[in-house]
Image (cartoon, rainbow, N blue to C red; front, side, top):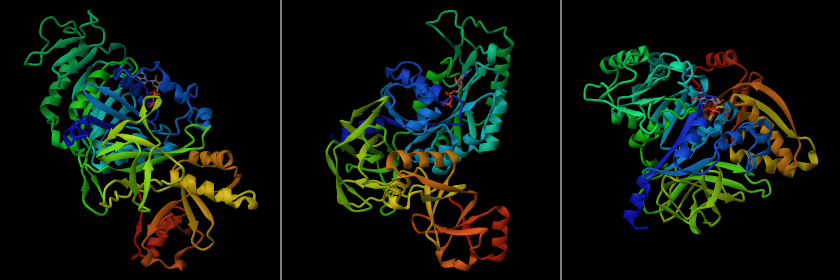
Length: 525
Ligand code: GDP
């Protein structure tokens, strides 16, 4: 590709994730977006994957059994001249670690909210990760075909609970059975839920914001309410501010109904006018990597095993940060400084995994992996060493001591643990003194997946002894004295050999702080 072609290709890319609390409608909206993109799939396939009936699925066995999406996948489609990559994330909160890391690989995020419920715990947590990255966040207030909370109330809640300005791009006219349409102040039109003429669902607005010509809603109470509320928002609300949006300080808000596919296309079209093209990425050693740098670079944000159970392969998901990927290219793996040839690669076109011809900055590629890659690895071409910033580590809350049931099978036990930890399925800690293995997780299901996979993939039966909830706090190695540890604050080290305490509870942590006021304790995310 010439530099001009590369620039054109990169500037077309829009890479984002959809975040939500389970059941807010993420799957439903994803499905609608894929349909707009002309991705041929039967309606309901994304859904079916979730419930475990997806015939073509080769996702993990446990996912099928439980009917939950354990893994994140990547979907790509073209729409109105843009190439869109949607990074799907597991809905179940027990797999939020995986979701958090996926958010490191996107340029913006769409937050779907159930408008009857408002902000739910998982939305808040995921939002905070996006906020930390400073990426643009867009909000879709879903389920307006059902009775919803007052829209002003919803906006207030977003502003107060999440601490971000809102700017409603459009406004709902009623909700539930009385959901008449959407007043679209940005595109200067009203979209009707039940237009007299199906081919003509929009009523254009004049300069004063009134409907041009006949307005079938003119005598409806919902119409008047919507106008009053819009006026209030015009006068007292925020101004649309593209800089704030780009910095993640203001969120454009859309209203609609994913299930009835109302307001989703408008959302996508308008979203694409604001959503950023691939952005720069910080490195630890040499400033920022720019997407148009001719040398290829990227980082591994996720490793997944057994997408195809017949082949015991793993796939390392790489976000391309600069340049262009070519099949068979040689790259350097930063951690080992060794060359690796990228010949066996997949791109993610909806539910089929097709071989990548070329992919550029902003795209995600999947590398078949035989154990070379770890989460957070950087790869690059060219002479300049590139080490992308470390992916954040998350503070686990649940812990288990783990041993191999059969002491004769230590080899497969270690192999299994190492690989699953590299994949990020669970976090591994070692007791400082005894070297015992301790697993940490954000959600209980992570342990169950671990146990299941150890048995199924590594033929290693494990014994897990629950240690319960603990508060993990890292400590500066220079301040550490092993005598500080007790049964109420167990001393362990993480895989980077950094020491931390697992406090039994808040009380134990407070007691420690009083006893050692100079010792600094830190949490991860
Ligand atoms: P996810 O867990 O966030 O992926 O949520 P789903 O997309 O699976 O949706 C959860 C439930 O809400 C399903 O029963 C959907 O049919 C339903 N749902 C999603 N969007 C809407 C909507 O706009 N209106 C209504 N009434 N139901 C919806």
